[in-house]
Length: 448
Image 1 (tube, helix red, strand yellow):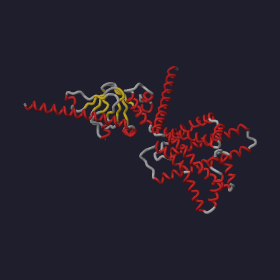
Image 2: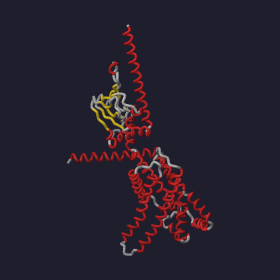
Image 3: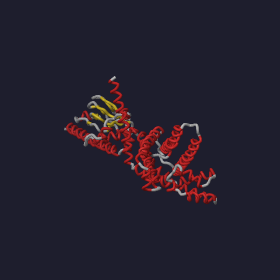
Image 4: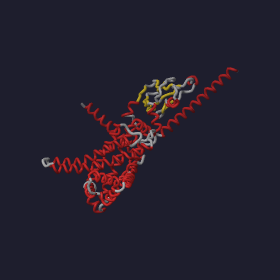
C-alpha cells in the first residue's frame, strides 16, 4: 500500500513538472515574441472597430425588422451600456439615410464602414502569424479573404449576442410557470456562459484558420482551454475588484468603456497565451530538448536554478529517446547506414578510427555534453568511425527530423555542433599528419 502511495505521488509530481514545463516554455515565448504588445494592439483594434461593427449590426437589424433607428438603438443599448461613447444615434440615422438613397451611395457607405472595421481583423492576424511561423505562405488573395472572414465572424457574434439576449429575456418574462431559480439560472447562462462559450469557439477557429501554419486540432483545443479558463477566473476577479460606480464617477460615460477595454486586454493576453501553448504542444520534443541543452550549459557556470530544475533531466516526452549503454558497448559502428544523432548526457565514449590503433596514439575521447553521429547525418553518408562506450553512459538518440528542427529553433545548438565538428576535424588533421610523418619516417629508415 505504501509503495502504491509513493508511486502515485511520484507520478503526480512528474505530471505537475510536465505541466509546469509547458507553461514555462509558453511564458518564455510570450515574452520573447512580444505578445503583450499584440494583446494591447488587439484591445486598441477592438476600440477602433467596435463602432463600425455595431453600426453594421444596427443597419442589418433596421433593414431586417423594418423598425426605427430609435428602437434598434435602444435594443442594443440594453446590452452595451457604453454605446453612447462610441456610436451616436444621429450617426445611425445619418447612415441609414445614405443607404436608403442612391444604391451606389449606399454601397459606398457600407464598404467604407466595412473598411473602417478592418483594424481589429488585421490586428488579430498579426499575433498568430508570429506564433505559428513556418515555411508555408498564404496567397495575398486568401489572406484578404481571411480578414473578411474575421470581420464577418465578429459581426455574426455581435448580432447573435444582441438578438439572443433580447429573445431570451422575452421568453423568460413570458414563462409564468417556471420557478424563479430556473429563470435566474437561464439568465446567468445567457449573460455569462453563452458569451464565454462563443469566445472559446472563436478562439479555436482563430487558431485553426488565421495562421498559414495552424496547430493540430487537439493542440488548438488545448490552447483554447488555456485561453478561456484563465480568462474566466480573471474576469470574475475583475468583477470583484473593479468598482463600476467608482469608475463611472471618475470618468463618466467612459467608465464602462474603460472597464470593457481592461477585460478585452486580458482576453487577448490569454488568447495569445493559448495560441503559444498550442504551438508549444506541437513542438514539445524539440523545445524540451533545446531547454535541456540550455539547462546543462548553464549548470557549468551557475548553481541550479529554475531552468536546471525543470529541464536538466530528460524525463517526460524525452524519455523515449533515452538510451543506456554499458562500458565497452558499441554504440555506432563504422559503415552503418543509421542516421540518428546522439547527444551524450553522462559518461565518456571513444572514437575508434581505422588505423588509429596502429599509430600509437590514444583514441579521441568525447565527454558529456557533446553530439556524435551528426556528421554522417549532415553529409548524408555512412558512419565513418566506430563509437564505443568508455564508461557506463546515457545518451539521447535523436531522430534526424528532431535534430534538424532543434538546429532551426536554437542558434546555440548550431554553435555547439560547429565547435564540435571543428574540434574533430582538427583532431583528424593532426592524426593524419602524425600518421603521414610516421609513414615517411619508416620509409626513410627502410631506405637506410
